[in-house]
Image 1 (tube, helix red, strand yellow):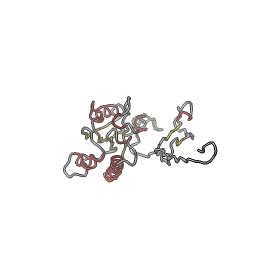
Image 2: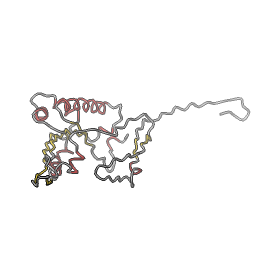
Image 3: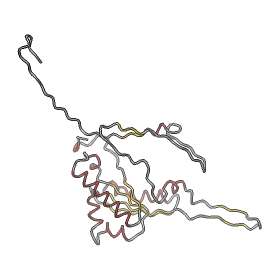
Image 4: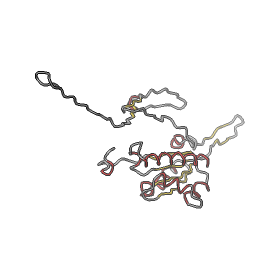
Length: 226
């Protein structure tokens, strides 16, 4: 800025900072008919789904997870149907396949323990096959807390994982931590615990699955930064 006769000058220096923002977005509605893709048995369809990064930092998105058991097949009940076939000598043979089964272990806190979530999931799975769903949960527990108990010899968290052949192990983090800034110590501890638990689960021959808990309808007054 200068005065009228140009003899004085004032300079202002502005320092601006921009907060890190991660905002991945998938336009699933652009695939098929408003997001609905119908396939007949044996069909193969190539689907193009636009993926956007609306944030201001480099982000990574996991678009495909190959996991066993095949839950899509389990729910569709593809392997639980039987049939009768006539062979050329007029003998009748039954063609059957094994009933699908799933052994699931859940680690979480009150979001898992409330209303017996493992029992509800088990009942749903048993509509289409055999299933056993067990849970280890404690109020307010974090993934770091689960990691410590899984590594504690003789602890129920440890023995339940190693004493049975599980297909899936489900991890549920404390509900606020996943929304913390990625430089925050609790977020980093949670990430590292998830990696360590995943390695232990794989060592036991199971697949890892992460449970996403629901957001708070009125926001989180204790963590308003996010």
